[in-house]
Image (cartoon, rainbow, N blue to C red; front, top):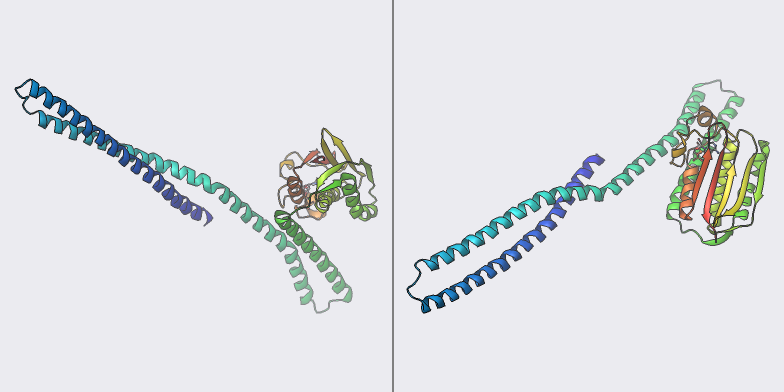
Length: 336
Ligand code: ADP
């Protein structure tokens, strides 16, 4: 369907491009023909005048000269016409091919964008469907049971609430992604230490409950940007370090090196396999280790959000990780 739409759009665009090329080529050929024929007529008339003078001075007349002159003129003009027609036919053929190529090239980014949107909608629907299906199945089973005990009903409600919490987390993530696209971010001078401390504050209770220590080494260095988005970004890295860190201590550092400010979050957990590394910033991507997917909550949106925020701050996120040896995520930002 989308392929057909783009094919017919490419054809329409080709016709437009080709029409423009042909209008220019035909007008140009018309002008060339006009100037060339005028020049030929003028040259021929000059020859005629010269010849008339020559005959006048040296009679008798050369027989058939007038005829010869007119025929030569007509044949030269017809040669020019033929050449221009061949030229325009070549322009039509070459221009057609070039126009189609240019039309495809023009439409390619739009096509890619639509494909990405389609994939995104598909992934989002899939993520929404899973908790809904679980809730539907559990509720149907409970309703069919005429002897449902109070304890079973409470368990069912608890399970429903867990699924609702997952749906809420997903919709929050989707909203954040959509808002970062449109948001006008603030551009304040922000202390990286302050950003890291706010992120730690958000996760300190969770870390404490899981008996995970957060080690810090925070230097007072400044960056330019939106304090809330940067805090969200570091929170995502810290959340992941706690989630995937295997219960071992995680550490967070801020420092300056080569006119760049780094906020670095490291864990000593399961690490990321080399095959997964190029994809972890993709929306909805979750590394395919069974422990990840089945036991650790998430929708694969965190790092996509983090990358978007880093990009908007002219920064980047560098990852060092190997399976089984933990991971280090370093947010690099230009210093002020
Ligand atoms: P989520 O954590 O919700 O799955 P993210 O976008 O934050 O989504 O991360 C994408 C994937 O990258 C995770 O599912 C996980 O497989 C991998 N990942 C991210 N951070 C870490 C980490 N610190 N250690 C190991 N794997 C990680």
